[in-house]
Image (cartoon, rainbow, N blue to C red):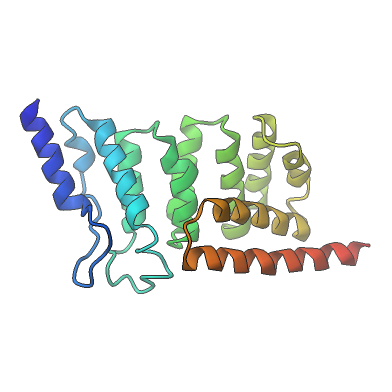
Length: 219
């Protein structure tokens, strides 16, 4: 047991780079391929470590701070979160929070879609997961049919009353903008102070103005 614990800890030190911030000469490393098969019975603990590593470095590896991938290898975030999901498929935070940040912060929309789909296989009745996945499929992937289905699933799974109305307006431009605003506002409430939060506030303001113009046209 002690030996296994030391191996897990050593692997975390080598691969997860648990420093307070990225130094100029240091890269954030993704977990090595196949590490999900080397858990020594500590699958959940390793998944938690990977999730914490993603949280710690997500903004440092974002399109705002590292737009050219100087410090963070390509798709670092997706590889980290995907490995965590393989180790512990029930780690809901990977899907509910990680997938959104992967899309908005790291511009990895394909990876985010994969994580949402994986999460929905595990938690099909989680309305927040369905709701956030609907945003990705509507706004980024441009699949309004799937987005509407996900929003209706969210409504049927206990989401606020307005989600059902919003689902019926998925094909309408004002409905798309409203969904974007609501999801970005949710991200804003939980974002740390800094450039990302400022960017979210700016995007919300632009979208709100656009929505008001859309609604005024209908009057």
